[in-house]
Length: 86
Image (cartoon, rainbow, N blue to C red):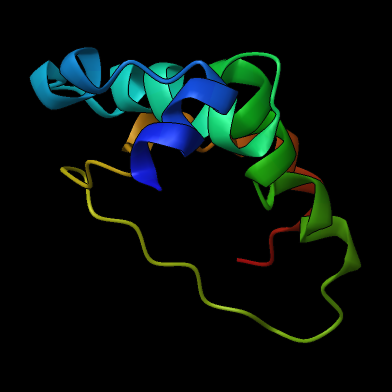
């Protein structure tokens, strides 16, 4: 069954097995499996940054500087400034 799925989705198992970076995995698997146009399209559509403006209660966001899924530079404070309370 896995072979049939990979044929239908144009997945290349040997490439997936050699992946060492999240972005490369998303390019070879996530994008194809879930119908995104590119890794950037996946990241944009899966990000919660567009929903920050809808939060109506005080919220604490924590982010580690070495978080491999959400690196510190992926959070644009310029986009969030108008929603921040100091």
